[in-house]
Each structure stands twice: as structure tokens, then as C-alpha cells.
Length: 212
Length: 252
Ligand code: HEM
Ligand code: SF4
Ligand code: FES
Picture 1 (cartoon, each protein chain N blue to C red):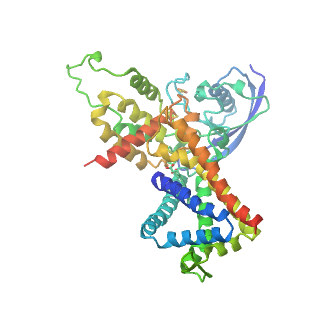
Picture 2 (picture 1 turned 90 degrees about the vertical axis):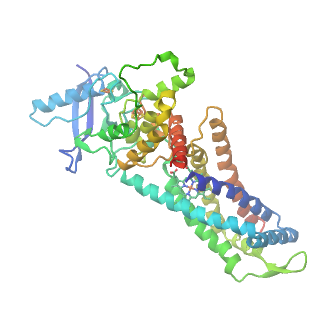
Picture 3 (picture 1 turned 180 degrees about the vertical axis):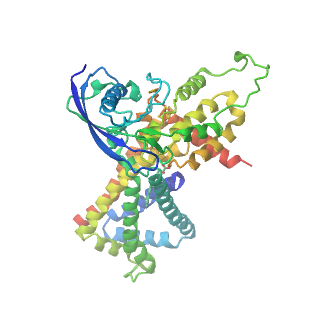
């Protein structure tokens, strides 16, 4: 759980770095993004890492479900009254729900962009060398002219933020890393990461919608 | 006597196989100086006088050291208040006219014996799986000061050793996990040189027994640490995770 979770965290950084190129909506920026997308879908090392990523998402989700089922069984009779707010954060209490929402979003998200890029009929444009490449940019830009899709994206980034708010520091504790000097730092970095990364992700569709 | 009137909603269950249900009990004459258990004594006295079945609940020392008292009160293990057991909870924490929910520890591994009394012998079996040091006591005692132990380590080991095995951590945990208890019992020995020779075996065996008993999996919500009457720290869970991971990858 912790290892796959942390790997997904590093993936978020890489994915965000790629996505931020979308903010440049000039023809030059569009071409750069499409070249980047081609690189990400063809370069062998990236492909190898992407298989590790698919595996991590599936393992993380599967293990999360399995643990949640076991945990439900560990308390067959529920409390008539439970004051969860007295001793734990809302995020930590709802990791399975938050994770399931992320998983549902991932399916929609990958159908729209990943599936289209790999198997869809995309418009073709020319790169800087004059070679043909798929125009993923136009697909993304078209998706983000729809208000509902932008709204879904923003809400889901909030869900991700809460998942990370608990998850980031939790992963270190699961790996046995708890130290008087370093744990406060890990917790602060975790909160910073959980807020900044989803906000930047959410900024992209909002920006593209406003400038459509 | 006292001047508070309360309504108690108490879990009644005739035996391990009974389904159980919440029942309402009015109690009058509650003094704010009573402990929660004394208030239940008053209620039971009332029930016995009326020829009814008194409510079974666990208790022993009534001074916060034995770990026998339990009770999930108004949605929290040992009720409101921090660093206390139910026998140390006083009625001044409540107001006249309050409705108070009283439930047993709810865990698949702590079956209800009757009403609010649960069987916590799962903890004994975790302890027996490795929570000890094997020393030869037949006349070859070593002088205590012959083995130097850093003060910080000794302090932390003692902190872990204050766990009274009450089970509030399990009752509170949304996953019904027994990690805080098991971590305390592993840590109190893992931190001391006398505990090192068997450390690997201990971590593996105690975690295996914990899982076998049907406790849930820790997801680091930290609820146990908040509700633990002895303030056992999550640091000990991290230590157990370290001990367990290291033992898992190096075992033969
Ligand atoms: C971008 C996607 C995701 C990231 C970055 C992520 C990250 C993390 C991290 C770092 C943890 C803490 C691990 C630990 O405490 O050991 C965690 C826990 C968890 N995740 Fe995710 N996660 C993601 C998606 C998902 C999905 C799709 C699910 C689907 C069910 C999920 C379910 C869970 C659950 C149930 C936990 C708590 C389990 C536990 O701590 O034992 N997550 N996640
Ligand atoms: S760790 Fe705390 S809550 Fe858990 S059994 Fe020990 S004393 Fe009770
Ligand atoms: S009765 Fe002993 S700790 Fe409460």
C-alpha cells in the first residue's frame, strides 16, 4: 500500500509537469505538447515505467479494497453511536471512499485521453521536423470546453487532495519511518503536496475553459 | 445523593449468541462526584431491587491501572476525556438531562460475553506468542547495572510498558486494528538489549497471532493514540513496522 502509494505520488509530479505545458495555448505550445505526448507513448523507458504504473494503480486499488473488506469484517456489529470526529481526521476515516472515487475518475479520464491517444482516431498534425503526429492537444482542449468535464475534474482534484492529506504521511508511518526530527517535516511536506499538486492539476482545465 | 437525572441507552445481550439490542434506562440521583462505574452500580442496585437482571460490565481495580474496565461511551472509548479509563471518568463530565450511549468494545476478536462485558483473551494469545524474554532464572542472575542501557531507550521502553491491555485502541480504531497494543508489547522489549536476541521471532509471531485473531489492518488514522488511557504513541507502531519489515525480509 505504502510503496505503491508513494510511487503514485511520484507519478503525480511527472504527470503534472507534463500537463502544465497545456497552459501555453499558442500554436507553438500546442506543437510542444503533442511532441511531448508522442515521446511519452513511444520512448521505451517511459513505456516500461508506464507498465509499472498500471500495475501499481491496480495493486493499490485491489489491496485497498481487500484491506477495507477485512477491516469491515473485524467489526461485524457497528456502534450505535460513534464520535469519529473526536479522534481522527475526516480524510483518514474515508480513504476507501476517496480512493474509489479516484479510481472511477481514472477510468473516465483514461477513456477520454489515454485510450484516444493509443487507440482512437485522432486528427494528424505536423511536428517541427514536418513529420506527422497525433493531435492530442485538440482533444484535450475540446474536452475542456465542456463545463461538466471541467467541474468533474476540479471536484476530483479535491478528492485527490483529501486522499493525499492523509495518505502522504501515512505511507512513511507504514514503512516504519517515524522520527522526532523528521516526522514533523514529512507531515508539513505532505500537507503542502496534498494542496499544491491537486490545485495545479485543477488549474489547467479551468485555464483552458476560460481561454477557449 | 446526587441531583443529576440521566437517560442511559445501554447495549443488552443475553449471551455470546444473542443478537442484542439497545435499551433505555432512566437513572435519577446521580452525583457529579461519582465515577461512571459507580453510576452503573447505582443503576444495577435499582434494577436488582425491581427484580430485573443487572447489567454486566467489566471492572476490577477502579483506579486506572488494571485495564479491565471498558465501555464505549457516547461514541468514544472510555468516554470523553483524555488519558483516562472508564473507572477514572467522573459524572461531572455530563450534564443533568443528558442521554448517554453505553456500548461494549465492538470487535470480531472481542466477543461479547454478556451485555457490556467482552472476552479480550485474544490479547493474551498475542502476548503469549512472543511478548516475553526467555531468561534462565536458576541462580545465574546478572547484576542489573552490568548491561548499560541509554536513558532515552529505557524511558521509551517504560512508556511502552505502561500499556494496560484495555483494548480501547481496538474499540476506537475504525478498522478494529490491534496495532497499538501489539506495538507497545513489541516495543517494550525491542528497545532493551535483553529483548534483542528474540526480536525478529517476536515481531513475526506476535503479528501473525494478531492477524489470526481477526483484528483489522492499521491505516494510521491515529485514533488509538488519542483514546489510549496511557498515551501510547504511534511511534511504537512505526517501530513495530520497522521490526516486522526487517524480520520479514531477513528471515530464513
Ligand atoms: C493517483 C492516485 C493515488 C495516489 C497518489 C494514492 C496515494 C496513496 C497513499 C500515499 C496512501 C498511503 C499508504 C499507506 O498509508 O501505507 C494511500 C492509501 C490508500 N489508498 Fe490510495 N492513492 C491513489 C489512488 C487510490 C485508488 C484508485 C484507490 C482505490 C480503492 C485507493 C485506495 C486507498 C486506500 C483504501 C488507502 C488506505 C489503506 C491503508 O493505509 O492501509 N487509492 N493512497
Ligand atoms: S495501547 Fe493503550 S488503548 Fe491499547 S490496550 Fe494498551 S493501554 Fe489500552
Ligand atoms: S477498573 Fe482497572 S483500569 Fe478501570
